[in-house]
Length: 308
Image 1 (tube, rainbow, N blue to C red):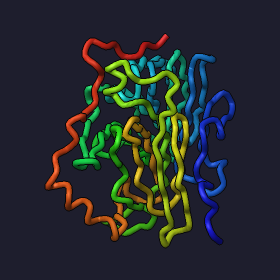
Image 2 (image 1 turned 180 degrees about the horizontal axis):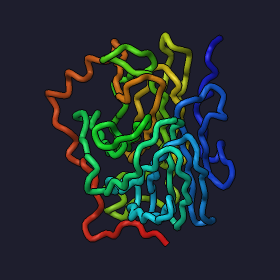
Image 3 (image 1 turned 120 degrees about the vertical axis):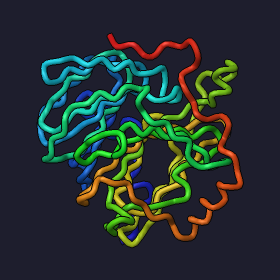
């Protein structure tokens, strides 16, 4: 049966539930290994029960306080997702939490029966990678990847694509298990967009600008999928299988996404296969310089978000 166009794409608010702006979990048909929750905390604290779920709390805008295991951890956060990495809090399975404050927050989730210890990853310890070259340059914050965090199943990172650039490019997949080459991973893309940093710093970004980018998925042998969506702040794309990419930032707007991945394979690894028709693109990067606009970091003299 042919895939319904954009059936795995959810505009902001489409998945609202229980005080959260968006909730992705195993109640979505065909979804098994990952989850995400998005909320603005100004309306009050939100509580998640203990159970067979590991979580990473990620401040998006501002900071927050996380109550867990009889203690409270303050996450300083940041002014916006385009101001470099934030500190995050990993909480292993079997532990509940309450998150409070005035910021905007994401909670990445994965069902698991394996318990790993709670860990606070400070912003200065987050590896910041400038990946690609030329118009394929993007910035990756690897706070929840295997080399940084000892999680049971979760693989989580952030990507900033500056205006006019492409990321998740070349298109790739991770939907079959080939030991040492490819792992099966569901993937969530949570998006935000804003006028470019240059426009913001110059004070020339118009109020109410319709910041957007675009995102594409297409079918592989694992299944049929067809997403071709304009993406804005708060939108979510799910990738259960198939090739995905590119994510494209319009020239006037920076694009951000939070990636949440997990899967059924014994190894917790991000191993991918490029679309063989596109993998040649990687060879062009050696002849180009990385985009000099990156890496984005917090503006000099600015304060991070504050939790209340």
